Length: 452
Image (tube, rainbow, N blue to C red; front, side, top):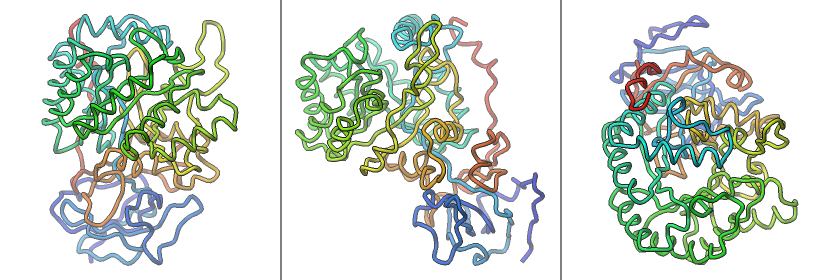
């Protein structure tokens, strides 16, 4: 068999055509990113990454075998490089993104971000503006190797129809590359009146998820909604009538206590396993015994938790002239130890809620490891950007397994500490067996957006 030898800095993208039978010999992949587990006889390194052969037949992974056991006419020896599946971002905001420099300055605070976003939405969020910014975001995600995205969409009365229509256009255009889902995002008190039913009908027609944020309109997390149980009942009844999953922004503050109410409502309505909660920041600051009780309730409700470490570190505990004293992220390790499904996601990108980011889930995961101490050992931390968010979204992505699309990224890294140490701008992204030629879009392309 002819063998293509790779120099330490060279991978030949021309070999990946999506047509041939190809053996990727001596790949190194975290065990938690292998859909069928580590193949029998494969060695694992101290980081929990298996040494494997990946057989690609056209657009599909045909087999995952112990290193040295695969066969094909064309062999690419990866020399123990890390090979990952394309990753999954299960919580972002495609409608808000890339308005830095146009929206009013937020001051980096949550109330400031809310007000700045409202001003920008009223002034600019029309079809062409939304399409342009969503397209920019997805071009970034494509170049970075993202396989699926769930986006929360601001769905205020008078805006929802425009935003959901733009998202629908975008989802159809990108269907062959990135699986897209959407969640309705409104303050929870929007479900008090008739608009809640109208919104639920719109979401059902679009195949989305029903959602919201556990605060009042114009308010902040931490200020209790006196009728939160009634509002949650209204939301869950609308979801059940339409068979919709639920995804909520919860307790995005140092002091807030909506999560137990959400868990109780989930159980009360029999919606276990169909609810996702993002943020849950305040859970990190309550006494340990109280946190344990809440986590047990969350586990009983089958709620999935998504932590957004980069954005929560940016927003939480910010005050003029004061260095932040806490990280702003939910207690990931304690939740996972209790059997709660926890994913990491990117959240906002270059908007008033987070001034940075590039829709790069590998970078988000790398930062999450450092922020939440998901190392020493790494164990199955990689799953939080692959298999876990894919399961939350219900999409076939985030793992390497026989029968799955050959959606891969090859990194110039031979250990997980090397994966974390560098940004990997030289990664080779492979979609359906074909080397991607996608490049990051120029920021200059944003200058045509209204208001620049």
